[in-house]
Length: 399
Image (cartoon, rainbow, N blue to C red; front, side, top):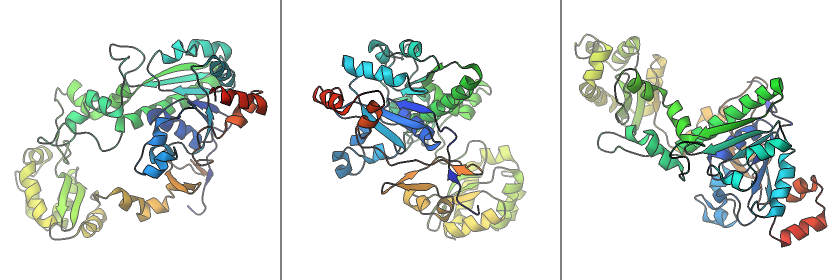
């Protein structure tokens, strides 16, 4: 691109109340903030989002600005309200009446018990889009269970197919199900906003992290439902093709995906193994899958003769997908990531943007992650709370 795109503002004018904690909800609201929405994070006065105390830097945790919080709360404002107190609930209802979207990830029924459920808030604000994110959804025998990411990873089958025959079941190395739930929520909210433009009606959205994860496992699920094949853990190998997976170069591992016949033939040529093309064990896709271990052993002997970067360049030049297995620091410092301007600096920290750029704009946080209650005076002031009243509410523990 010849010039840096402008900050994305497709959701400018949309007010979002973010009542969520930890990851799934905050990540959903973060995606909306990156597109220009005004996201107001409503937090408990006595500690706020638990993620404020989580992360690899103990000093930041003490400051209630843990790295887990910083990761998905840039671009938001923070107001504190104790929803267990009548005055807190009354103020929240006033605030909700001004909102376009509300996101919460409490257990099902919590907001209703507080008198702040969808029916109540929609009576005040019929255009409200209310998104409830939970582990298992608002109904079903598991709906009342507490759920963190790892619980859903286990329930969804993700762990059963992660690792190999010796190591599975294995947890995916980041909060996959929380993230998928957040993405699904952001997608559903954006769809509901579009629908409201046509109908004028708000919506209640029930996002289940379990459902979101199963939906994203389409290939694994359909192999069982349609082909009758139960997915099993294959480690770093791709079940649909061979050779396709991780191989060992002279200085580390490299992924190679020669999934098409022409890619396999080009791989054999590039590696100096043209005889494999006619070998009946490897001549066609299903034979290669049956004889995967033998084929991988032959290829690994050759891969060991060169460093990964050389193989990566050689194979990609021959139109064979290949890439070294990098660490997080390596990919964040990679020329590809830097060229895409993927990291944004705001308030002295760097945060990840969304995974897309538009022709003339790109998602961007408008401000750094907020301190707890940093915007209470601004937001509550807009509801008619003056400084003296705000001080009284602080003394009463409402804010």
